[in-house]
View 1 (cartoon, rainbow, N blue to C red):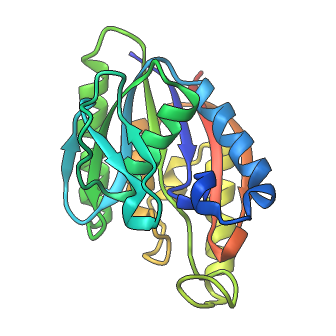
View 2 (cartoon, rainbow, N blue to C red; view 1 turned 60 degrees about the vertical axis):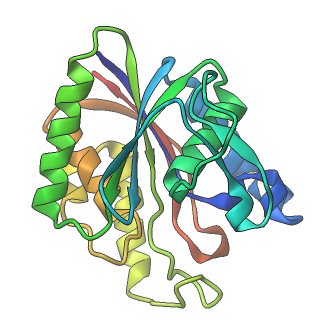
Length: 229
């Protein structure tokens, strides 16, 4: 039974040990992520983007060692001690769970970043069927970034055309406009995750709370919660 959806960015800078002195600049963002995580029940289905489709079970541990610091994260309390290589979306989901919802259990559904919109929507509908088959309360955590080309110092370089694209994405997420998510271009790094979300929610009405929108370091980040009406 789906009771809540939370959206957070796929951002290593959320992890204080990786923020290298920028933690104070990210206080509003991290506070919003904590608030969003608190809205979810104890069983999570996580939606993220990676190199290929994959499902990562709650018994998994990972590390941010590949990003410079060996910060261990786990997808549940019963996760094994030995870390495995994980895509960034799973690492961030594990960090959010470990930090803000230690009793939660997360299963990460990774979707290939090159899926076309119809494929992403179909996968979202299939995931909704998986969620609806669970009798206990279930939350969905979407871990995805917007455009990474919003300023001259952005990791993807500066693309002025991406600024209105990011604004449209932020507006869609702020009101629960799933149809608008189906029209996102590839400049949105987490496009497939947002389109899986669109397939998952379908035409249902949602009560949406926008907790954060911004572009620190030239990357579009959005945090919010969606609840069924």
